[in-house]
Amino acid sequence: MTQTLTWTQLCRSADFRGCWVALDNCRYDQSTMQPVEGDLVDSDAELSELCSRMRESGRTSCEILFCEADVIVETPIASPRQSEADQPRG
Image 1 (tube, rainbow, N blue to C red):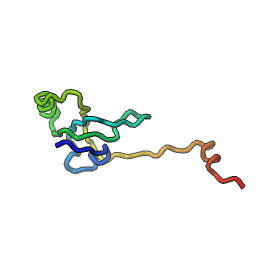
Image 2 (image 1 turned 120 degrees about the horizontal axis):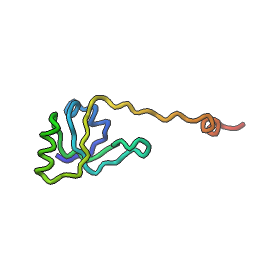
Image 3 (image 1 turned 120 degrees about the vertical axis):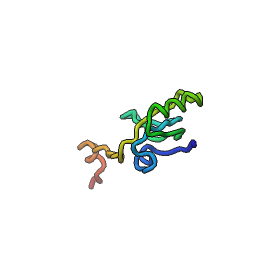
């Protein structure tokens, strides 16, 4: 069941919303340290069931996260200096 998905894809998927997911080989956002994407290893609505399967399979170093709802991705607001620097000079 291993496939690489973004965190946004997971949270927007009706298959995983409200479930715990186990991710391996995660890539993290450098500023928030939140997962951006990873290899989906397993999922379950019950955390204890997911953890039991992970232990039984020997996969003990996965990130386990809960898919609550849609992810809101915020675009960083440019500082006034950056905005001025980006404007053409004429």
